[in-house]
Length: 352
Image (tube, rainbow, N blue to C red; front, side, top):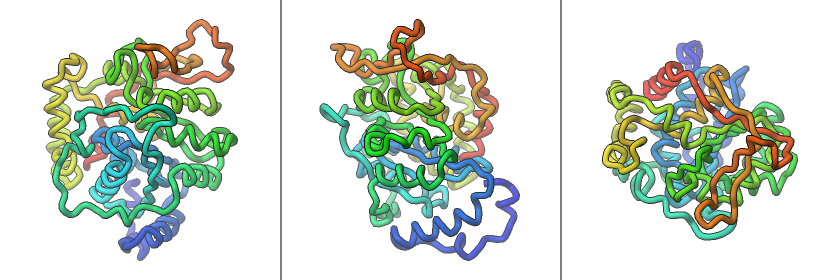
């Protein structure tokens, strides 16, 4: 929210706190009309682990950004836990008026990929929260239906940020093939460019968790598409010293993040993956930062991309068509270099 909005007197609708999903939705619609103006409109699809929390908080801390809704999907934990975690994150940011929708609980084909315990069993570091919001605050509308509706209500204005397995997005485009043409842009944390896996030998987790969904999305979403791939996030890591400063801010949001992040920090520093040991990687926040700030991406490659579906070791691996052999007309922007000073500023503002 901009400094101008911070200084003005709160309206009655903003002072009100929702007590049910239906009241919550009505309150959000009223306050959205008051605040939207010329702000960027985001729809966020998450599997709320800790880095999803960081990405959501980055968006909520950015000026002139309106989050129209958060859709939840299986991934870092069960979709039920994802919904609980998302509500906890929004509560920590005093943003429970933002509607949250429950989506797919499993991939299109195959079995659920074991996410391991990098984010804890519950997805938020197993940090206790006796005052966590209840699931009664979830919207009754399904995430896929909500995604289609929100985009159709705001044609050409919504940037869709996906920081999770792409099941909800794949189902949405199959239900409404015109959906991508109505998006302002699509920002994805997922895929890989050098065959480096982080959950299987050759695949990044979000794509490995639902390869068919990733294949559908990369082929059917013919809108401006920006990819923050696994290797890119590793090359763009921040020093642990920055993480210490970031978490040391004197705010409720910083204390919340410090609590849920401790498990993942220790897992990173104890990891056998060298890229995790030597720096702070907030994977999902890079995709969110690109959606929030048009000046964030400094350099990118532009290629057609797809996903391997049948390989014994390569299922879920992103295929980058550098030679144009796939004869696809749509190309994605693959992030190569970003403004890390801007990123640090956005991250600091997220917990301020």
